[in-house]
Image (spheres, rainbow, N blue to C red):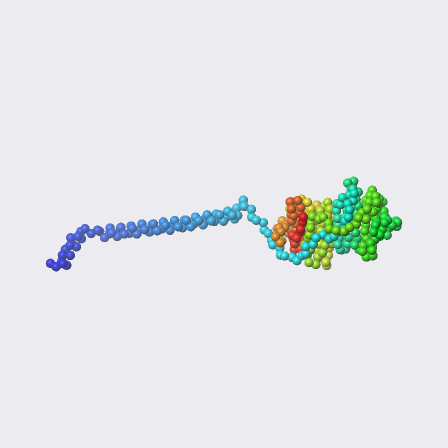
Length: 336
């Protein structure tokens, strides 16, 4: 017997100890199935984690204002392009060199150019506690009237003449200037002595005024037609050098809080060109930003307003002018 025969005999003896092939294959199938289940479970876990992360991020994004009624969306703000303009302070105005005893200045008006029926002039009003008033006006153009009264010396070689201007007792002291230089009027209400008017005319001066609006942006080819200040507010009228009165823009600054609706009837103007414009009542519900300044405007842009400080607000209006100019004028205001 050779080695090969010995090997065959040994295999035959151990054949009965070998496992059943079907059982072997069944065990292999079970192990493969278990591995597949574990792999699927792991994949599902990853998907769940990613989905959960996406949901958390989605909830955070949605909660930031999408579909939430308790989160206010920021107001829509429109940027307005730049507009060429020159910042200008109030023109020089007539005033007194010395205080007027018993009277305090209550208002002033400056009309640098004679336009739309307004004379080129500067005036200041003084009022006593009992209601008596003195109005000093420097007319830069025109010819002085010639009262019939005798000349009254005023100092420095100047003279004036008195005239009675109303049956109620108003008196006016007329002071002619050199040829082509205008003239001065000092008007006193009833009860103001002639000597007080002489004192005013003798203290005539010109200089800077006290204005809550220190400067305004005047668009190129525009000019200041009038600037006034008094109990009703501060008024500026700007007009194009060539154009109709309806194209002018009026700036009004007053006390209080900027209203939601602008009503020109509730804010009567005095001594301004634009105060003759048609009444208007419009909501200020459009928001724009000009040169970093936030404004509220009307839908057509012809009314623009801003809160200057906690106690003052300004509104700019044009009846038929360019809407873009209105916003730029409102944003340009410098105030004390």
